[in-house]
Amino acid sequence: MSTSSPAYDKAELKGVFATFDKNGDGFITKQELRESFKNIRIFMTEKEVEEMVVKVDANGDGLVDFEEFCILCKATGVRDQGGDDEREGQVAGQDGGEGDLKEAFDVFDKDKDGLISVEELGLMLCSLGLKEGGRVEDCEEMIRKVDMDGDGMVNFDEFKKMMMRGGGKLVSVF
Image 1 (cartoon, rainbow, N blue to C red):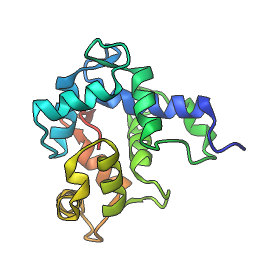
Image 2: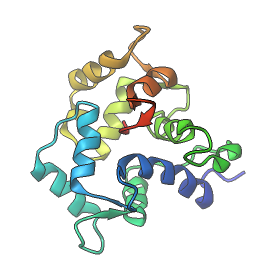
Image 3: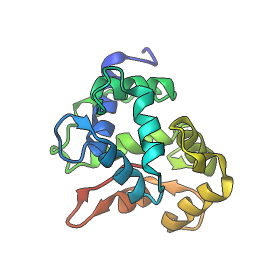
Image 4: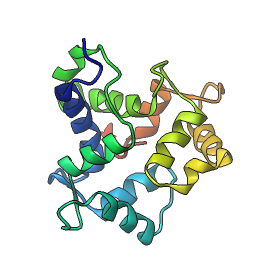
């Protein structure tokens, strides 16, 4: 089994993209990007969001479409870690959004141990160009806010509780 099947990458990234694309129009606006980060207590200035969008906005329309999002993820090292082909069949709606949540969780859980560590969170935030990723204290604080069992890491259940708000709707991505 290849460790970087393009079909699997696309299926995984589609779920993550959908969590950023709040209105489902196929584009991530600067506002949607900023709100997604704000929901996890990462506050970005309009200038920081603008710089992030400019970095990946290949066609210059001021929006991030799915292909541009894929380029961003490939540049930041987000890829399939192999094996779980059953997950490809999960689409938003079929499992109440839990498949999307698992995909988003897996993007952060680089070593696939079922936990998001301070280091993994920092690496992902840095790869997205966020200064909070470079400050261990900031990453520890973010994790502390959702760490229910006190182990200093975020497991999937904690991640799911953080991400689900108001009637079980997916509102943001880590």
